[in-house]
Length: 279
Image 1 (cartoon, helix red, strand yellow):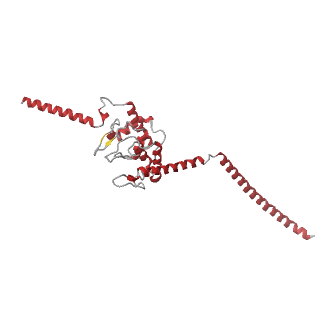
Image 2 (cartoon, rainbow, N blue to C red):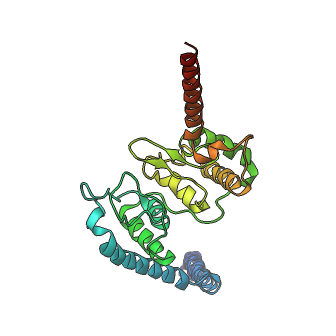
Image 3 (cartoon, rainbow, N blue to C red):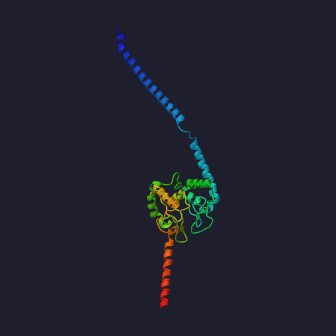
């Protein structure tokens, strides 16, 4: 009779321990199941509500197709001067590594490339390639060389026209004239007039620095400052703004000096002849 009494408390403790262990196991199992259900639910909601990856994959495929098409165009029209790997060819054409799609756009859209002849400077003419072909060449050069990319969107900052004029006079007027009409430089080169230039032409020119023009990085001129310059140039071109008087500067920086020289020489010769006749 004494044995069952002595076993009673011990057996109760063992049953309590087993119950506690079972309860802990149940809590852990139910917690894991709840976590799995929550993760599964989140996955279903994400799959249902998130945008499909198909457009991104299509864009990537289109980009690769543009690169391939650009490579074919490059091998047809550019390789003889710029090399098989964009490294350039001595005495023919510079390297295109690092120039970016911005430089490619400017040279191709303004018809300066492909070059038809050697000269001190390539003049603007009708583009050889279509808009689509230009984009394909841009994609190929950007993918293989890197560099500044062709911008998109609105490229005019009309809210700061005065600042654009100040920046233009500080950075551009010494070559392009105060009214953007261009002018002569040394060694047969020239700063072209900006009348025919589009917003994108001007922006990519500032990015790439073609010919004798310096390159303006975003550290030198911020994107907003570039857009302010474009707004000023296009306003001057379209509204024919003139600071006053007969627009001699419309022909470039040379006419003022030329007229002063001619008038001065005529006066000197006239006075000399008059003095000679009086002697």
